[in-house]
Length: 283
Image (cartoon, rainbow, N blue to C red; front, side, top):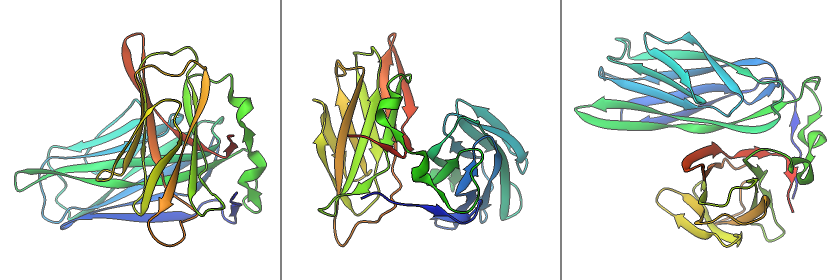
């Protein structure tokens, strides 16, 4: 089942909260942005009486560039698509915020995931909080803020044959049997050694493989992680693997947040890239 998403506002902000005892981390990120434009990531940290070393890391999609705006005396660093802010000692205030300007490349289009982690020391114990993954939609230049339909910019999988190494997730959809279907398109070019797809799925679903291309399929229920693993990647320069998510009870959600990576070996070096979700048709 294909989902039609109509956008009535250019920026709709969503606040997501994560808690661990007295520590709270919330983010304020737009749900939609125009390619080539800027937006801000605002992170609000309620640290209670914690005063120790801490680090905030935010993982950005490739093609997003970060610039420091408000750091609350933290040391800012942006490298390899990762934002890092660290404090030798957290600010005195119980609640403080950081703000980061993000520039989106003009050729970006589709759905992307922003995630991260806040690490700190409490009573001599290292602890961390997940910055819950946030999906942001990048719309093409020239689209208006009303009546824009993501399906009007749908791509065919055939149009991606000449891409460099990549892994693209078709937007998950509901089958007639009320299970969620997830298709992944891998463009590997001439790679032929080790490869691994790793996807983090939401609670409430049990995964089953549909098409594995001779991969070892593993599901870790505790970490909610599924893996497709190859000692030697398939011969084709481009191939598809698929799995389904079976709801443990009730009807599955129509909008799911799935994050993932594709790892491979190239010139005896291990590399990892983010899996990008796009509104494409993969058969």
